[in-house]
Amino acid sequence: MVMVAVATMTAGAQFYVGGEVGLWREWQNGANKSFATILPEVGYVLDDSWAIGTVIGYIYQYDKGAKCNALEVAPYARYTFLKLDKVNVFVDGGFGFYTYKWKYKGFKGEAQNAWEVGLKPGVAVNLNDKLSFVTHFGFLGYRDADEAPIFGRNGFGLDASGNALTFGLYWNF
Image 1 (cartoon, rainbow, N blue to C red):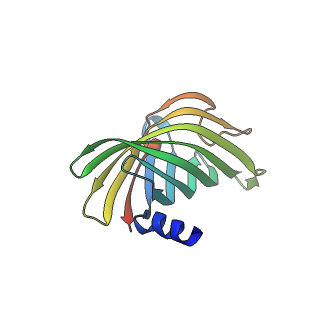
Image 2 (image 1 turned 90 degrees about the vertical axis):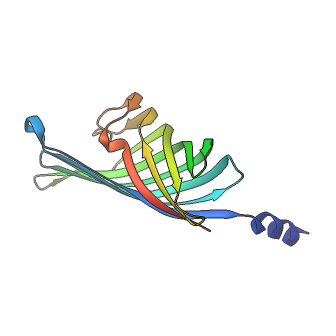
């Protein structure tokens, strides 16, 4: 009976794999900052409105000679609240954990940790039955980090900066 139940659940299952990348560079007004993300992702569609997934990714920051390398693990639940033909508008609600190290002029800092909980809105354009173009823009929630914040600031708020904009492709199967 268990085998029949599992076969029934997975017969109509829709998994997706893919990921997003982001790149931001500031140089105006004396700024010398770079920000890059590589965010592989895997998920499972539960029904027409809900999906669950996780991101396991890499983040790089450069700020006036200081370099930061970070690993991200961020499970989420996705709610799709608007469907317009091939365009889906959604919001991901989830928790992210980060571990990272800063380096500055040969000095290597101790490993530090950060976390966030909040909402990330996004849009998916279904190019065909198997391929979707996906973008996330912004973050609304709470972030906290050890001594040197990876996010720039700790606290609650809305991040609508270029650092919070990513683009990617998903393969649905």
